[in-house]
Length: 555
Image 1 (tube, rainbow, N blue to C red):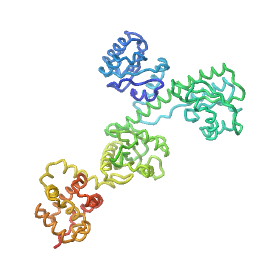
Image 2: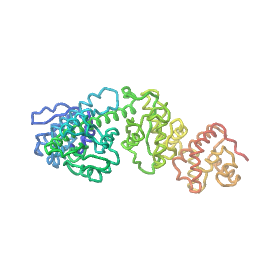
Image 3: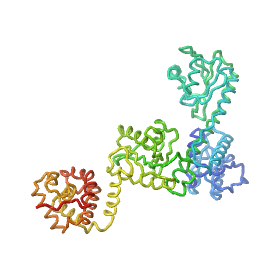
Image 4: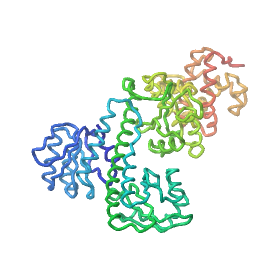
């Protein structure tokens, strides 16, 4: 089983191009259509329209595919772009995919079957990151070396060595350094770049010969490895003498086989990676789906890799986070995405230098935060069992909401450290969405401030922040203590509040916190610092005040 989207993404634009997204995104089998009698009874089929040459035949195949529950139909151009075919696929909810003109049906069948077999082997097993088997590439390198009677390396499009031939007897120092380091040395890269080798690889299918270079670099014969227009890599052979043209042609044919193999490896890796992402997502959403997860020893935390504010859209998608975490040493990050928010599962009881631990991730987040203050890593409380991962995920998501509201001004935090903000946010949310606030004393103060231009909401909040001490509260408001006492008398006369009652103080403190956190527009610009102070002080000091530490109003 593999997703249609994962298959297309894994094979790349060199093989498949999506035209219409269908209602089903899971492929369970592949069927090559050779005529009207082809059996399409298996639901979840990827139907390959090999013999379809007209729009009418394509529409009929789409209808048959829809009746049998097929996931998608692959057709060639130009029939795949016919408006009637596109319209039919859209109406029927069947995916429509174009096979690239330079790709073959045989290759597509082989690649798809290989991917399905690989994903089927993973189905029912514990989630794990499969290491792609590149051993066959070494056999290809040996075969290529035998053709030209010279050492060979196979490299990817980024000059990383994927395989090399056993024969290296005539290799130069640059070749040995490349094999040992599994990457072409930078000085040698500059040498080849200056001679236009990499530009040629990007633009042409033709082999290229490179003359000898500095530091005894021997001549090279370079064969591009391409799938359609996409460069997958290259074959590099030492060329101490000129390789005959017939051997070059044979080496070029070898490159086409290597291209097919690289596509299969990439597609299998993509399918396995997507399956791991899907299973991790399911485990974070539903406790019953977590039993088959294979994780490092727990406990674990689920971390929301969220925007620290809602000031702008963050560019940190799951793909970018995966790249960042790999660059910092986590070769197989446990990442998924829920509602477009990247989520990571990290261990909780490891040292700061342990890759994949919460302390390690905090260090990474702090480094990113220095350049982009929207970045944040927000961790739910530890999960002792895999069934508790969904609870930790829910807590991390809640922290992400607080971060977007500006209540967590830091690159990283945990649910335990931000518990008071969580409590206040939950209470405030209930207050603001309920009906009690409309008839309460705080709402009366809001209306009075709005109609009379007074600052009773700010005054009462500041009074609570400073534990009912008129002198300190007056300093916070930059008014005389007598002015504060007069305002407080007006507030009590207006609302009938008894601030000596701990439960009433608790209620008014929560209501004020909700207002100051969610409705700052009630406050004047002159008192905006008080609103900020309420986020730092009211949320903590009000808790102390409502616990019984508020002094009676003096005088």
